Figure 1 (cartoon, rainbow, N blue to C red):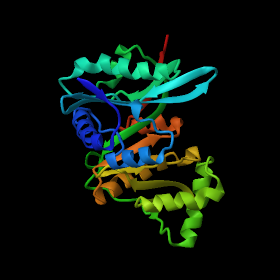
Figure 2 (figure 1 turned 90 degrees about the horizontal axis):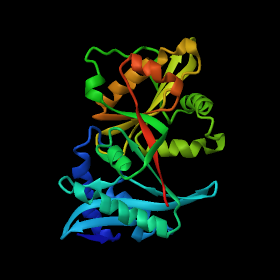
Figure 3 (figure 1 turned 30 degrees about the vertical axis):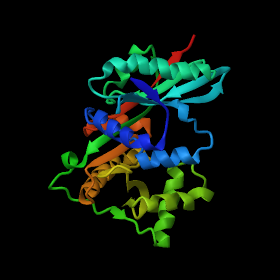
Length: 296
């Protein structure tokens, strides 16, 4: 067994390893393509090749773990690790992978290390606990849905759901007002750049029209980097009177995704107060948990 650091030629091996490992998981997580990794590494002036740990058995890549030195918070210098990918049949190298990675972070001054994982990330939650990490707070909820399992053959869209034409100034103005109301962290000056990003990702906008043309909610559907996967935005509910809109927009976008040829829908829970409403129509979110390890 031999550890090697990053070289562009090793990305092909990494792509094969990641594909093999995640094929055993209940859900296929989002992970950058090898082209995206190459671009990210090349464009990051602070990239450190030695923090990418490739473990080979002769010419076969059997494990990989990325790490980084993070910011100091409250007097503690943090490091981080990403998903440890270990080929099936090579589980025994787990501790070796941990020691190599943690040892390097410690030599760079790290006093503690964090990682994130979901319950559906295969062996990773149990491996992190085996390595001595403690599970801390939940960082976010999401679900990956199968469009074919949710779409009904008898579905008929409500007549108050209208799709917007982004090239129509009146339509865009309606959406802008509602979007900025829901996404308070987005400044009006940045709206045009946000829309440019959406258009580049084959965006479909749906807008709910109700109560004499009052706009009450929206849904955004756009393609993910992975083939056959789409992203569904949060669906804002501004008034309890319009709570029913959540399911109406969700159902509409599920059918839209299927019609457009998407097999999966990635949907994050942004408004935590809506979680119980989702459960009532059979959608349950998976939390992302933060794990921490204090170093001696």
